[in-house]
Image (cartoon, rainbow, N blue to C red):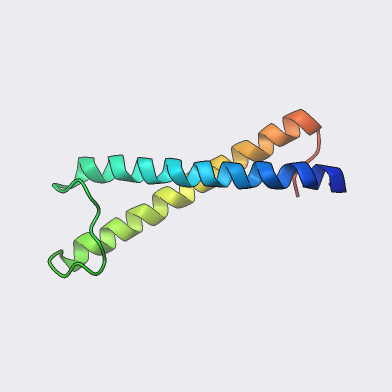
Length: 89
């Protein structure tokens, strides 16, 4: 990748990462509302919630964030390649 291409790809990558994080938070929130009685995911320091509930929420959140981040990064790389005909390395 040329220096000019890197200059253009870095801000694009940063913007898509931020938007991906926002999207992942929204997706996780919707999933958690559907599978739990509480609208909010449990805080790990909330000792009123069970260990199973807290750890399940953390595992689900990690899964959702990982999937959304990979999908957004992949879409950004494909879009960049479609425009510039170069692979973003």
